[in-house]
Length: 242
Ligand SMILES: [Zn+2]
Image 1 (cartoon, helix red, strand yellow):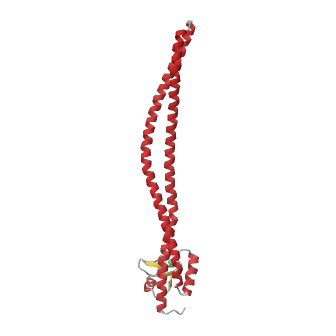
Image 2 (cartoon, rainbow, N blue to C red; image 1 turned 90 degrees about the horizontal axis):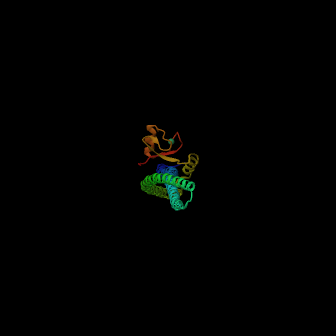
Image 3 (spheres, protein in one colour; image 1 turned 45 degrees about the vertical axis):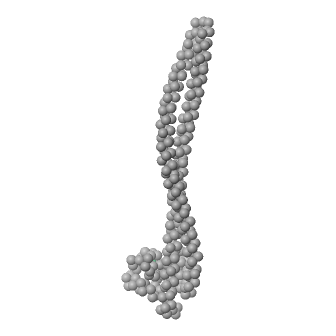
């Protein structure tokens, strides 16, 4: 390529900036890729709480309805009983009298059974409504927490998207500074690997493919005076402090 040492150093300087930018871009992309699952899990938890609240409310509504029905039936029984007692005074024959007494007895037994059912129901209603109250108290806190978690996630998503947009806008400026041959190489490698084409070395490891680099090559990469390619993945290697 006919580059002298100063050219190469300048080239590597630009490549370091590109490597940093691409790593930031990749980190943002990876994090962004993980967030929708978390958003969905928050939404699912919220739906579960809301479903449980609705179930509890519908159980309470059912019980309250049963209670109103029983109370109405007891009122009806009382009315009937009053009527029967008046009628009892007016019967003419023993046979009619006995039949009437039988009716009254039947009605009183029915009332007794219904009153017992009503008591049990009121007890259940009490328990259920206490449970419901303490559940609602707890679920209100859980929901508030989930809603704020969801908001945090949405905020993070939009900030990552903005960050990626900013980095993408910045990149062509850096690429324009590269030697055309190096730029072509960068673009070819990027097209093949999708994430980044130039990367740095940490702990003697290529940060693109995490293959160990021979110590002698690491020394050369650290010198930043020669274009070195990772033999395992084909990414260009540069050195910088993180
Ligand atoms: Zn590599």
